[in-house]
Length: 189
Image (cartoon, rainbow, N blue to C red; front, side, top):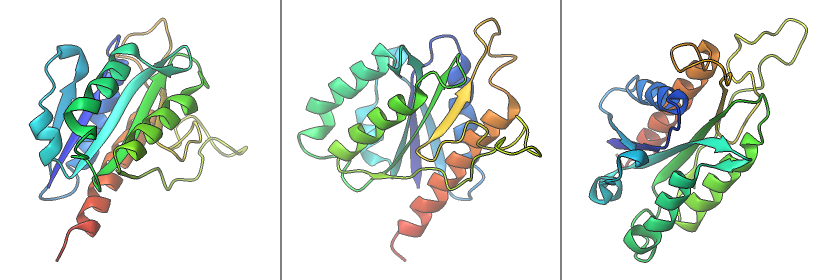
């Protein structure tokens, strides 16, 4: 099985989150993963076509995915959407912003609609929200309370060596593992 992670990262925080998704994928035996940064310019469209799942990731800027990620989405129209090359592939998403909320949900909704237009099958989180009770803490998985995908928060005055925090990265890894396990369940016996 092949799972590709296509992401953009403006300052390195979302790249760190993408690496955590990849680590989660690798927790499932027999799955290969490939990180594809849209910032590098060259998208291996043939690899995406051959993938069993594609996980999308982008920072949330001004309440939406980054412009480079949106350019990737636009470019996919001619190269993948016209012939529905991603139909029935598993999809998932993750995002990061400086604010606790930062309108990250809008970015995940954008990714979900993008995947739906390609005929993909979306996998969200099956985690209850963390940090939502008097006994909860920022160290809980899914501390930002998303079901649609993995959310992370990175302080604007800290680099990717310090943030996102461990629980956000573990939530991303959990999503990667969930995607890999879902792909495995959908494989013919």
